[in-house]
Image (cartoon, rainbow over all chains, first blue to last red; front, side):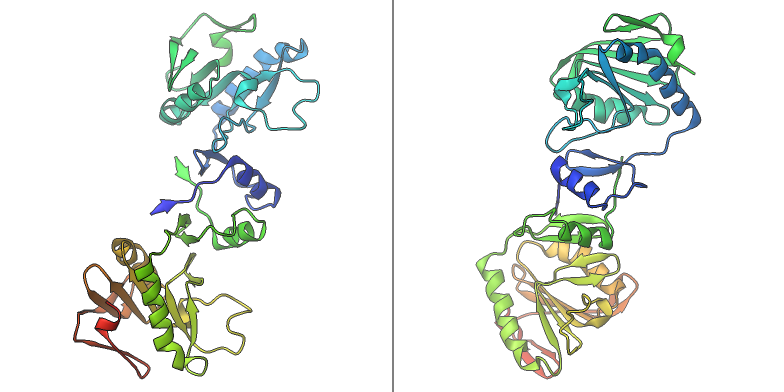
Length: 179
Length: 177
């Protein structure tokens, strides 16, 4: 039994035709349409804190912030990371879906999804060459920082409970993103 | 990771929106889109023979659907052959459903397990009264009758020498093996 796999193009055609409705929170992972689980209050708060902390980069036109929108990694894979920092563009990506090469940083907030984020999504981000990924672990109150993508993993990994993380010269205290 | 289950309605809208290439043969099996494998010459010939044998029943006693859609519950399968209750519009207005079927025949060359374990329970649940699975490798025809829940109460395996009969059409089993 061979399950049919969709391409990202199919996926968008379906969305445009209104087939995957607005109520469907879904992402495309290796050709499969996967449902995103609903997020809790802490998850939402963490994301708002991150937006707040990273916003100066957008104001300085160093990057664009994208929240829970699609990021195309491969022709058959288009997850919706909680947050992505994209290379700044004056047209705000009006003409195309942002791709891996546009991403400067991807952040996932994990309350119940830590295994999925580390085991399924992180390898995809590494393969696609996303230079840096943060996984905010709300349960253990840590921020995992991954750098230097190599194959299906990252050459550099840190788990921070305190201190600062920095991106594009901006320093963000770890405590500031943990609600 | 929860795979999104595709509903019948979504499937039909995908087809209309041109999401799939025309030559892609897909079945919707309980929310999953499954690609159908290409058919070999032995399989194709048996389907052609069955079509010819059941020809005399058409259109007074039955309508013959060959590798065409049959809606069973929330799934849409493409049985090799389905004999359906006669209808003047040949089901142009709506796709036939399990309750419209009189007999379904699946020819299994490499798909026996899939036919028996995945498709047969769906036919039973949808109330398809009789299913024949022609097992080319095992040289037998597995006849299932009296659907009950997800299975069939009556099952018999007919080998060479036995006769199959349906609405007056008599078929020696070896014709299909």
